[in-house]
Image (cartoon, rainbow, N blue to C red):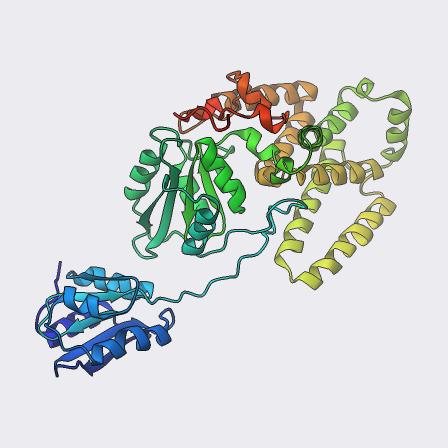
Length: 477
């Protein structure tokens, strides 16, 4: 490892060798005592106004000794420190913090004047609520930690910063509440991320995979949210949170499946209404996953599952279709997924036209031409709407719906039951940082049922969730 030399020319050449990019600028100047000095800074991510007023102007008037401690005291920058390793100085320059080098000083002075482009705080598109806070996380980790500090004004909030990625040098903030967070979770997260050797970390989803025990499991093992109020509420329950620079999605651990059936709005409406909407989401999710499979199984193997009048109606609509029921349903599901992907990727105004084309032209024309039946279109539409009632589980449930359809088309209702048993076995055996993801139902924790599918009154939620494992059990007296 190379270090700063008292010979300014030698140090400048060594640092320039580490930072050969053209957008890394080096300004030469002379301090108040006549000594040569230079300042390295990144053109795009450094606040030049602060650099000139609070760093370079004081340096021109500086007449003290060539010592890092004295020079830092002469700079009116709130965040200023010294370092003697060239690799550390190069990393700070790339992060946007300028570095001062002075003739005769064996240290470099780092001034915190970076100005990284960031999106303004706005309501997140994935966690929309009609009641409650509207703020959402942004792609800047410092802004996100400020939003957390805004809601948790306590010295017990601990934020530990890590750097992950050999080339991206992504800042990661691990947040926890001292004395409340589950024991061992924070240490395990920090240890895992510190040992990771990866080139770049562009998004929090990379960290979610790195922190998961089951690398190829369909069910996720960390919770996700884009709302600071939800994030802070989970910290207060005993979880540990992870904020990633460059991603508006925050991770929380341990994770429970029942979290995705809950909404931030549930805590701003009466308990009865919150209970109803949670049960409605669960019903819509099961309805969306099983309806296409049961439709195909009833046609192929068990027509007695349907009421007589409904069976006669379906039989009349599928009489002249060239495709089998399973192939018909699979075709319509694939068309729905293709339309969904196309509407997301295409520009907004073209996407609106695509929705009209998909709904009217493709759907109505396919039915009129006799390729698919009207019940199949209706069932796939209802299934697609049901999936979006729980947006955090769309990736998992869409795959499960397709597998259920294939099982139903192969061996009928027996295939649906076998696949359901296999899915339940995987669900009941899955853990997130030592906590079963199916809690509080398996294992059964009576106390935690007050805020699971059923929502009790605020006065009944005086204890923290027992299944999380927080050492501080009571949150309200």
